[in-house]
Image 1 (tube, rainbow, N blue to C red):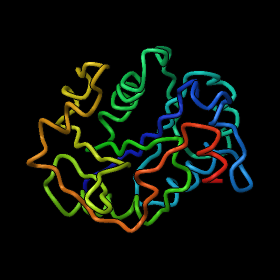
Image 2: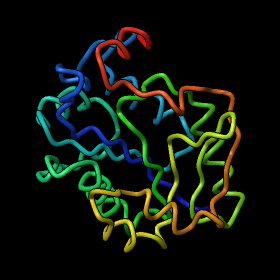
Image 3: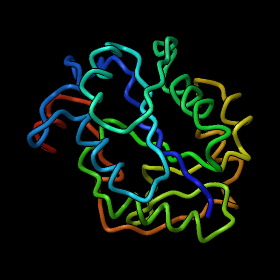
Length: 193
């Protein structure tokens, strides 16, 4: 069975939120804890959390969880730098990475497992969840694409990789609109909480 590392991107500054979203309360714990708890309940083989801004605080909150913490000192360069840190950390232990966003603590376990099952049952290099024709997160990338992922232009991010492989991408219909919805603003947070 192909091994998949869930890579949770938790390094950003939450500039649009105006509060540090990773540590905001969400249904009885912090947002980052909610994400990690869900990922640990899935069939992912390991969970890697990429931290950056206030990384020591996030790592301390996650100390009780069996996850790998990866520090991205270049987090101000954007999400691509965190993806790269996660890919480098997972390389050698996994066949693929499932890129997960820390601002989606409301995505249910069933969505992650549907994407994981589809990846493991296929030969597709990229697997994405879809709802009503729109694609969302999490996205699985086979690590045969690692060099492309590490070489992306930060202005375009992983879209360049998914676009280059769109004909080979497996789209998995799911029943959660949460795959399209993230917490960028205080209004998003209040609505999703």
